[in-house]
Image (tube, rainbow, N blue to C red; front, side, top):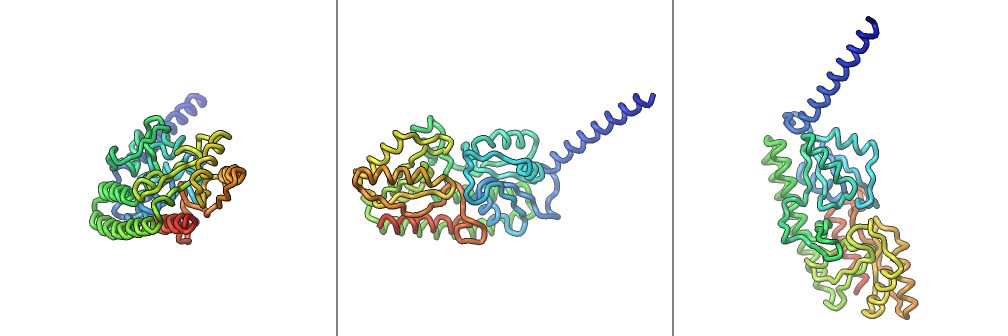
Length: 314
């Protein structure tokens, strides 16, 4: 009898736990959030920056990927999964930027968690589909400031649906941020135009700057493909070295989220061909700089990149 009662108690506890878990999932999607800050979880720093600018005081944002972190290869920790579970809403890049984590976001959405890729509002005809990526879209949309403005509008729209009482606040914040991004776009355009067209050749560790090149008039070459999951081989290094030596490119660039050794190997290969190419500096590609630094914001990161590129190639 005791064993039977104990088994019944365990069963009841399990049922209650499942019901509570179900209620927790439902609350994240449909609860009234007007009386407290909205808990947002994001992936890369650029998305965290958008949410903070659009959401203002109404949001508290937990970013999973900090400075120097490569989203293509990122493996979520137990604490990351907890941040996703506890969030009221999740924003991520999409277009397979986060690689192995994509399945987690799909699962969260199926369970009723508001989960949105910031790239979803961008028309496919504005997205790059390089042939080497087998028909998939390039996820590095933030390097075209005008596309990143569309991502900001998506965040604004989804936050307003989740928290309609603060809709006007989100709209005001978005309009102010879009104005800053207009100014940033003009700054990058002006800086790029200061460099002769024949000198606008950008060589980096991986092919993350395609949108930058298309919008601002640069020919872009990356040692690795759009995803760092694709490793560069010896032939890739030699072919890129041939290109650099032939075109007499002044500088090539390392990235904060990619090991510097790959570009150093290219530099040595170029030097063996009789051309002394310099490493022009570090660019921020898939991750921003440290919190509290200019490069720790999207606007500061973009300005740093274009200033570094123009300074080195001049």
